Length: 329
Image 1 (tube, rainbow, N blue to C red):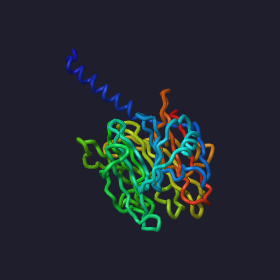
Image 2 (tube, rainbow, N blue to C red):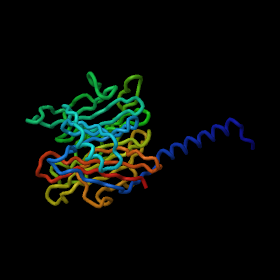
Image 3 (tube, helix red, strand yellow):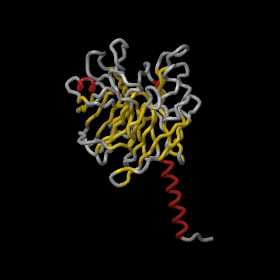
Image 4 (cartoon, one colour):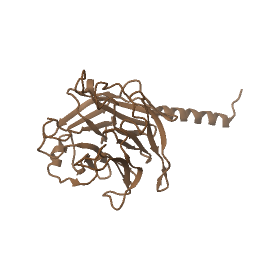
């Protein structure tokens, strides 16, 4: 039987689409490559770092703290350069308690998420969390909101994570769930996806995600688990950093952290069977309060990932900011 030319063409096109989808929906694994610890408090400036982003157009690194400091650093060639450059750079002081910063690489649009206090205190009377953006950087005028200011869904659990794809789609993840989702018996939470529309964005589309509620069951404050950052892999995949502090009676008193590769399946974000990296078994040291994550610039084909920890306020906790570099296997 002779197959019509148009049918052959349709079949061939379908095969190409299937292979293209499979190529994008790839399993990711990383291995430890390098690390450094910055200067112990009170010396140095890189303390309380909660967000990191690289801007290829200017070859600059942007770092922000959860107490409002903002750094722009040049000439970073390896991890040890961060501490060196920061000590010769003045941070910009802002009123934003940053948790994540991202750029739309095509337009230069600047996004940031903020998490304030659950209850008003002497340091901060604000009890909201939100996601906003400016069309340019440095910011001027008033921000636009993707998630307008709202009260934190749970104590110390607001919005810490954002990702922007190459096409400009914005993903936002709550730390432990939105209002009504922060229950230990409910492991389904939702990410919000904002597709571009003209100069703005379409209404948010929710995607379900299964968060780990069993990582730190002994902790009086961390038993819900937490998503501390997300990062775009491509238009169909994200990297999700989950971590919690396993304190409390019977706990290990260390941070537990796993990096997950997730793929869009309908309106669900499906995790790979195994984590892309397990920080508790894959590092030669104990991970700290991992907060920020970004792609490291590379030219050799193998992708590299940088992560940074938040050494938390106070001079008595003996924490130091960690920079960790992973490489794709």
